[in-house]
Length: 330
Image (cartoon, rainbow, N blue to C red; front, side):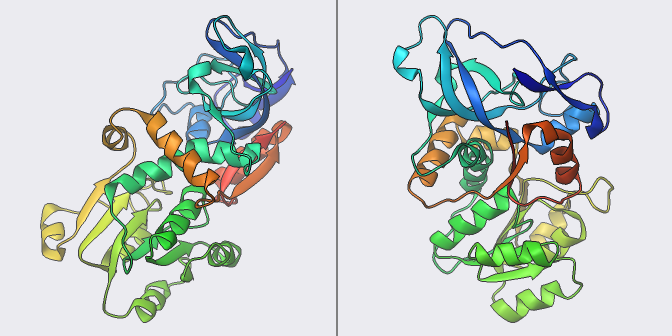
């Protein structure tokens, strides 16, 4: 088979498309003929040699932890009925997704709903489960006003859809006209370009003096600060990422005094807090995400690249040139 291998930490060009031995499933495992593999920002950090929620891998390594495709081989003590099944899986702490074939435990599999292709299924098993995890921290009701930063991204796209289905007024923020158009097509009541200096005025003109109830923040920096200023008393600032590397561009940290004066809350909802809310079981969130997609309530946006162009996919993701979930297709 062919796979993407990383032989040395560094730039995206270090990702090499090359032949490697076919993996063989062990006890309780299956092998998946991969039709789509997810790309995550964590992958780009690990490629650079920056440890995060996962330890740095031993090199050479095949990156990637989200795959979808068809079971083509099974190991011992695995039901033969799985052969030929369309499945999606998050590989957990073991990489190996950027490949034509991938091995994982049978207990990690989810059946792909008929209304999803492999790339959409990959989006839901990773980005979808994170979205449902973030939504554990708030309760959206009819009449709520919601601000979503990076609303053209994978998580942002799903947050807009979920909030609108809940009856909320949804304001989606994105960078640049093309992304703003996508947010508008996705159903946001107002789509705003946060690269324009007057974007907060546009939001105020739309919602009046009411203020926003929830700010879903994955951008940080000045955009987040302006979004916080739009929150009404009792509003929530939910942080699940930040785009910048400098202190000015990073996450906004509010003092207890600022929070009390405004009557708002601010909390990071990714990582351990998200896992704790899920009772330590991410599969619960995966099940919910797949069910929402199967019912048509959530429709993931996908940005597709050929597997051989994994380096281009990494560069595009790092420079914010993508919309939706980035997926590699062999």
